Each structure stands twice: as structure tokens, then as C-alpha cells.
Length: 333
Image (cartoon, rainbow, N blue to C red):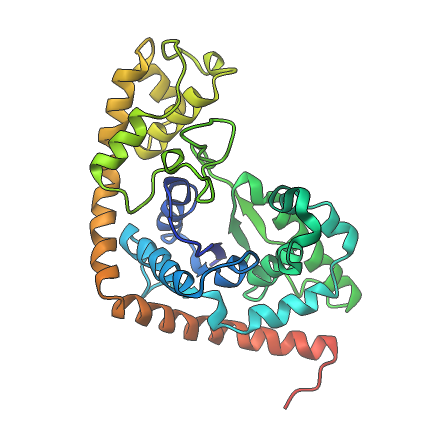
């Protein structure tokens, strides 16, 4: 069976974009693949995190996975920092990857902005750690959003260069991207040209997995729209990013195509459509939120899942890492 590795950052305020773009897809994938799902707390500290908030956020993300339906007995859920092989392999990859490759990574430029000189080295080398996350388990497939495709290409380049440099043909696989359809990239409710983000200063820009029904409905009512009626075809979404975003969210939540959703609401105003969207979002999210609240009220079960997952992850990673060290030429006990 092919092996999937996928991770999600533990930086709190898990939002609808994280759910539709990642967690919901993981639930579907677990029926056909061996899955390793990771809360990437080491990636999280590439920018400053309050230590207590980081612990709480790590548990919250794990709780969301469990509540959404990821089977922690059949598959692996763990947090990255519990498996030291991620850091060890990342250093080896720091010595395999080339500066020119990292200089081409657009996400660093986006995140560092004009203050790149003050950005952490970790943020710059983030893609090497991502490559280590994947290749430590010789994962064959990686669910990624459009914004992570470039990082996966880098992981493939690193795998190929390692295999070539150490003359170990096909030691590391070439992991394949898995990009899903509707709403793989959920945009801000306040600006349809920007990705929904937990770092956006406006709470109204995102629906979080801890929002109650009234808050969800309020945020959707206040979501930016335009004065025109909803279009009859996809072509009618040209130049209307907010309409495209809201229709895409409805399609994803209802497990229908964007074409079917457009046909259903063609010619309607945003007021009516937003009410339908709010009702659907509440119906889909409320059961997950209820279960998350139970898990977070007593984190004993979540902590046990993460410990067990880390132990099982190490059982896969340790023999692979030992082989890598032999290939590189490291002396081992």
C-alpha cells in the first residue's frame, strides 16, 4: 500500500481553510492509504510562539483530527517534535539542498516580507525540514495545497540529489503531490484574493473550528460580496473573487461540484445564498466542534494518541534513519 505523509501547523485558531484543505481530505484518504499525519510543531516555531499557547494549539489540532474522523488506531497521529529523526534528517538535507534552490522559494519571500534580514534561519530552511518530514518515512504521496507545491518539488529535488550524490539509486522515492478539487485553497471572508489565515488581524476573515453557530452565521453574513446576482456559469465568476470563494466553500461543504453549486443558486442574491451557506456550515461543523470540546476539556486521550503515534512513527523512521546515516558515513553505536 502507498504511504501518505501530511502535516499541519500547530499555531492555534484552526480554521475552515485548514479543515477543507487538509483535515477533511485526510479522513477520506485513510480508507485507501497507509497514513501518517503530523502536527508540525517544529515548523511552527520558525516564527515566535508562546510556549504554553503552542502546547495548547498542538492538542487542539490533534483533537480536530480525531473529532473529524481520522482513525488514530489504524493510522498515525503525532506531533513532530516527539520524533527526533525529523531534525536529524533536516540537517543532512541542509547539506544536500543548494542555496539557489531555497532562494527561489516564494513562500519565504511572502512570509518574511521586507524584513527578511530579521527572519529566522528556520523560516528560510523550512522547506528542507518539510522534505525531511516526508522522506523520513519514504512517503510516496503528499496531499498539498497549491501554496505548498513548490516545497514538494524541492523535496523531490533533494531526494534525487541525495540518491545521485551517494550513488543509492531509488533509495528515496519521488513523492507524488495529491491536489484536491473544490476549495483546496479557501480564501479570506474579507478579501477573496487572499488566503484564509489565522494570522489575519480581522477575526471576521475566517471561520475557526471553535466558533459557535451564531458566530459562524455572523461571519458569513458579514463576508465581503459584490452587488451582482450569483452567476449562471463559472465564466460569470471572472473578476469576482468573493463570489468564487463563497460558492467554492458551499460546494466543498456539500460535497458537490462548483458547477452544481452555481446551477443551484444561479440568479440569487447574496443575502439568500449566505443564509444557506451559514446553515450548511453550522450543520457540518457543529458535530466536529462538539467532539473537539469534549477532547479539549480533558486532554488525557489526546496526549495518549500523540504518544502512541510518536512511538509508532519512530518504529518506521528509526530504521530508515539508521540506513541514511550508514549511507552518509556517520559512525553509529
